[in-house]
Amino acid sequence: DSEVYPADPMSRAINSPKGVVLEAFINQALRMCRVSDKTKGDHLAVWSDLRTVFDKEMGACKNSNFDFSTLTASYISNFRFLSEEWVEKNRIRIFALEYEMNLKCALEGWAYAPADRKIYQLLNGSGVISAALSMKWEGKNAREKLIERLALAYLWQDEALSGPNMISLMSPTSASDIGHMASFFWSIFDDTMELAHRERVLSFWNACLEINWDDRSLVLSKISMLASYVSVLGPREQA
Image (cartoon, rainbow, N blue to C red):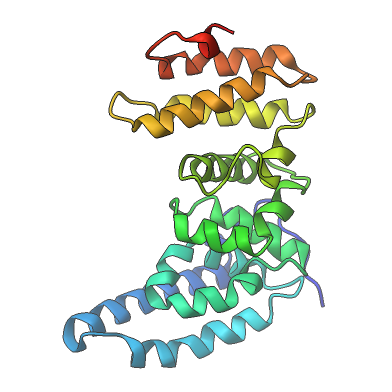
């Protein structure tokens, strides 16, 4: 039977009896693999035994087993350490496009994971980022973290202003999302930032000025914070 979707997937996952056991097992798996690396040089045999548990839990993530979807996504970079091959093979089962409630739980969990370029590339190539951008969200945290991941991918040149994800985001009704992206760019600025990254942020700023936003005042107030990226006033910056 299908479970009821949790109001706060991460809070439930780390506090429910099953979630507590799952998180403890993940941490124990990490410890066992690290010890094996130190004593034997790899952890292939240890992982071979452990993965059967994770595979069984994964099989239950069909509008159910939400704690596992949430926690696995929150530990996704750690799972890359356990087995890169397992993550690549199961990324569409962890971020289950076929089961929207599990996908939402995974995205809520992913919001608590560290930024990982490889994971973003895997999810983007699998259609997960596009699907996530089109979703309606009850809360703000996962959506805002998704926008931040997209912003980083844009700086890494894994996303482009002319690409489908950025085009989808930069629609007149997405002022709040664009405002958050601008705030994120402002928050990560420092004087040592690469020139190429500065240029990409300024290109984003310029693109924002060309859109007739539903809430133009919000966008203008947010992108005005990006003035710190300007080192020389040229025609683009004076526009």
